[in-house]
Length: 159
Image 1 (cartoon, one colour):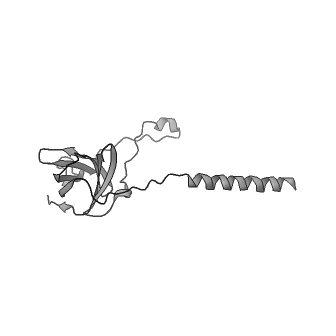
Image 2 (cartoon, helix red, strand yellow):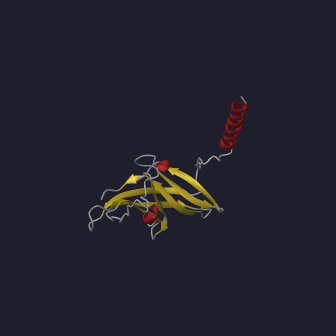
Image 3 (cartoon, one colour):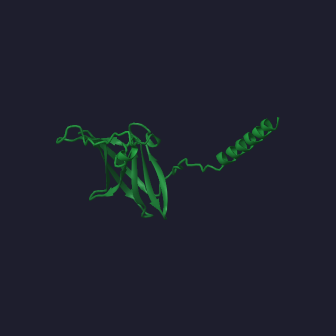
């Protein structure tokens, strides 16, 4: 008779402990800026396909900023579930996203998991930032803080 009471008591403690730990999990939902402190004139994307390998493809993204009073630093762009670093170019900002590749990585498959140590995991698209055909998310740094801005009016340039 004593063991069922101890079991019920331990189950109660574990349940209470789990519910307390769940409430302490931080909220990782991203907060988008309603209005960025810079003015985006246009964001254009152009699909590309490699002539060399035939199976490599992706997007070139061109960002034109008409006003940047606070001198924010554009950091990354998320588009169709992919991410790329934004770089400064001669006529504005740009990013290149590679969506597929013909590079075949040699995978080591073994019953001994230590033999598989050098395998590189496959990179999958991040669906957290997949908003549709003409929408992207631009991350930027303002006063040391990372901020997110959704831009819904991307223009597709043809090949």
